[in-house]
Image (cartoon, rainbow, N blue to C red; front, side, top):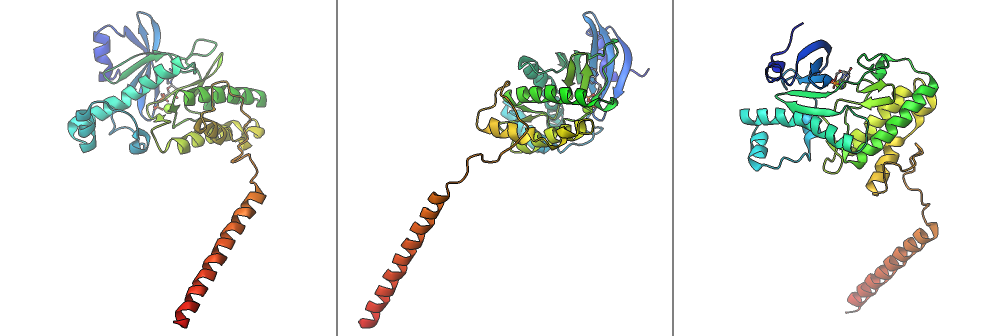
Length: 288
Ligand SMILES: Nc1ncnc2c1ncn2[C@@H]1O[C@H](COP(=O)(O)OP(=O)(O)O)[C@@H](O)[C@H]1O
Ligand SMILES: [Mg+2]
């Protein structure tokens, strides 16, 4: 097994005892099952930006707070120092989100630490103790799909209440353990309040899950939990336990037709008066 150089410092420092097995080589990271003094963990080793599939980083990063202005300037200039800083921020973004989401009660892997480009987190396992399957690995019954969807909508509401939009939610980034779905892979998450792209990414995430799970339970495919939740969130009415329907009504209050007609009438009368005044003035001009 080829152990990446990045794991060496953690092995030397004893944060990891040994590598048990490679888990998966993803788009943006290599994952390993590792043994630590506290038990088995999942180690996510980030690839450098050059090797990573380049997600439109700017769209995701907007509104992320970087407190230190020297760092902000270096990032903006994309100097070598800036690139290094951007890498660190990208990696820390995932561990930060995992801590915030675990606090908010969403089902995510429990984070332990993120150091030197490696995230150590809880290994999500199936009933047999093996690494848990992704949603994309499973054939589901309609009942299972509906239950998984409901659990995901609850967790996504918790995430949004905590100010976090996943940004890449799909059947590949949801694992299934014996208690239900667990959401993973968050380095690209968006800040719900500060990022102007958050609404679009949020709705895309939710529509994607509805379309995928809708293959097993067709009724899910036509739901609109994304727009419903975002509208509640905008109105500051979304709480983790707010009842949801999956139906989005852009504006539930019917327009007051009589009021609209009164306004049109008032504008028409004002215009008539104006025309009359103009005509009168023109008449005076001719008389002079
Ligand atoms: N905490 C974990 N427990 C079990 N498996 C995991 C865990 N984190 C990731 N994986 C596995 O590794 C794969 C890639 O991880 P992910 O965080 O999605 O990285 P990438 O950005 O490369 O997609 C996942 O699809 C999943 O199968
Ligand atoms: Mg992934």
